[in-house]
Image (cartoon, rainbow, N blue to C red; front, side, top):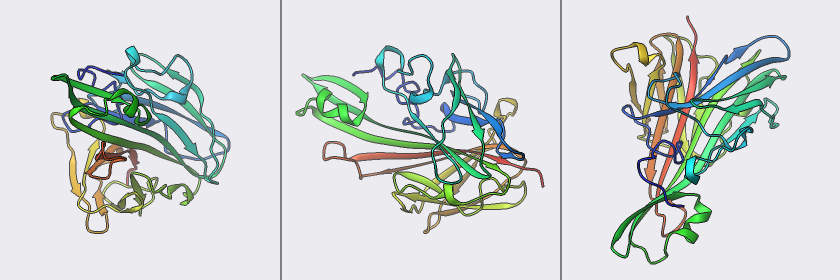
Length: 286
């Protein structure tokens, strides 16, 4: 599965670096705090230049349903969606669809408490030479050994694992679904993610493989940058315990991203790892 490097967003789009000057992958729920019984939310998911404005590509989700989620020309594969209810059970999505600029799905909120919606993806990017010719490869970890020559010259391979999350609460917030899995880079909220208020500091912790992740850069960007002259982003760094604090300047939707690069790849051929985390958070007026 060889791809042209001109497809950085399409090919395993959750695994490519997402900087302030690049396309950003995101999910946007219609609401994060709800009341009443048997309520619903709709979630949009896309990759775009402007946050929460779909104008570039849909976020490809493999188990969304509808047309084949495979990327054009067989380039890479799509991510996986999971929805966890307050009692820890997995619940299905409804009405999933992938259009030209966005993917969308509905979630029925039956239980009281906090739901966690997660999109995860893994893959490998590799550069090497074969017969003196430069090659680039991207695909699943399972396919790497089959498709990249074992004796490839100047092989440089990176294992990418990325998690994107949204939190939705009906009634009183609960903590059970906030427990981390211990795999990759994750957010361990100290302040509940559905209890964020403008002007009030909120505390979070980043963990890598279940352990505190110190000295990690965190980028927080308010939505609506399409209508601002400046990005308005905040750059933070986790402390020795992986903790950091955000003071929200205004109400609205915010995009949070963090990336860790280390030498904990899955094999001696794939030594490098890039672990990424993305969340969409809603901040309420005081």
